[in-house]
Image (cartoon, rainbow, N blue to C red; front, side, top):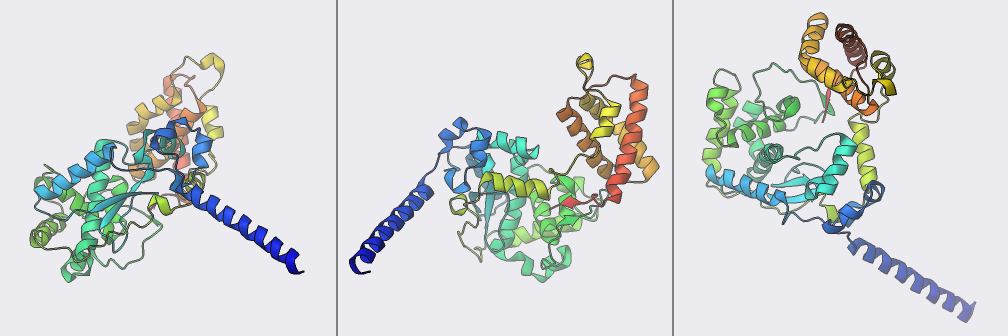
Length: 368
C-alpha cells in the first residue's frame, strides 16, 4: 500500500484542486451585458444568474432611480434606499433597500421575460416608476421601523399577519388607494402602506382631490403627517445588505421561469382551445379575415358588461378569462370567419361558460 497509495492520493488531491479552481473560475466568469445579444433563448435559459454580469450603472434604471431620489428630496425626505439586481421586485424585511428584477438590466433579457411571462413588469419608464415608489414605501417602512408604531397598526392593521398566496380583491372598495394593478393594496397591510405611500409620493398626484370623499383619505393624511414627522430623522436601520443579489444566485433562468410560470398558472392546459377553434378558424383560406384576438378586444367592454349582468360577477374577474381567450386566439392565429352578429353571440356564450368554469375551479384569486 505504501508509496503507491501515497501517489494515488497525491494525484487525487491535485485533481480535486483543479476541480475547485475550475469551479471558482466558473463562478467568476460572466457573459457580460454586451454578450447577451449573442445568446439564443436556450443558451440564456441555461445561464445561471451569477453569470449575467449585470450592473445598474449605464442603464435606463440608473436615471429612474435618480428620479426616485429626486421625488424623495422634493418631499423633504433625505433617506435613499439602495438598489440591486435580483430575481424579482421586492424589499426584504429589515433591509431599507430595493431589489430590482434582472430583466430590466438588458433589452435582451426583457425580450426573454416577455416571451416567458407575456409581460415585462416595470418595462416602461412610467411602469418602473410606479413600482419603485411602491418599493420605496417598503424600504422607508424598514428604515424607520414604521410598522412597529401603534398608530401605524391602527391605520393599516397588523404587519405580522401571514402573507396569503392568493387574495380576492374587491374592485369597488374605496378603503384602498388605486396604484398598482389588481388592487394590490388589498393583499396585505404592509402592501396597503406601500401603495398609500406611492400615491402620496408621486409628483402632481392630487391625492387630496382624487380621494377626498373616499375612506382611504384617512390613510393618505396619516402618511402625509408621518412623513412630515420623520423626514429630518436619521433612519433606525442602515443596513446595506443585498439579499438575493445576482452574484450569489446559482439558479438558472430556466429553473426560475419554470417556477414562476407554474405559480401564475401560465403552464396550465388551455382547456378552451377546442371551443375557440369551433368559434374561429385557423384555416389558410381565412388568413385574410380579421383576427379573433382583435375582434374580442374590441368587443371586450360589451362582453364584460353582459356577462357581468347575467352572472353577477365582477367585470375584473370576467376580464381575467377574456384576457386568456384573447391571448390564446393570438397564439393560435385564429380568424373571424362567420358573420359578425353570429360571432358576437357565440363569443358571449363562450365567455359566460368559461367564466363560470373559472369560478368553479377557484381561480378567481390574484397570485402574490
